[in-house]
Length: 81
Image (cartoon, rainbow, N blue to C red; front, top):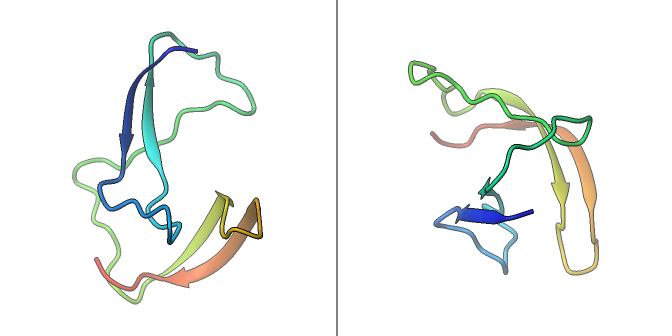
């Protein structure tokens, strides 16, 4: 696969495992499968919840130097906007 663009979060911290996500642009169309699918982004008019709102959070990836991968499903409160 030919990656033509890689945009990481400007505040990514490898040491703290924070903001560890990116957008990848590829040079070809992708086949949609059970493992490859587009994500839905909110409309420009979407109003994000305020601080204190409870949200369901899921993630997958490296969370420390001793735990390689973890799938986490939990409730969390939004701390700030």
